[in-house]
Length: 106
Image (cartoon, rainbow, N blue to C red):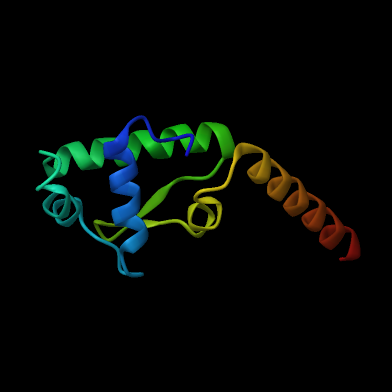
């Protein structure tokens, strides 16, 4: 994915994708990644915010959103995870076309 700088970012995204709809706190994510990566909750939070910033700059949508201090991956990222840039661009174009048609019908 475009927003991942390294394998740690990818691991954080995988943990977020495995979370329930309630999400996980940064402490929970750090504890789950502890055997492989020495992260604390502040480092996890910083990485999530950085990935959000990068994806918002590119696509206008965040990677994850905070719900009562728990982080949940957005539906948009669930949908595009593993897709190529070209596939994402085509999907975005079709969404734009659909919204234009819907607004004309109203």
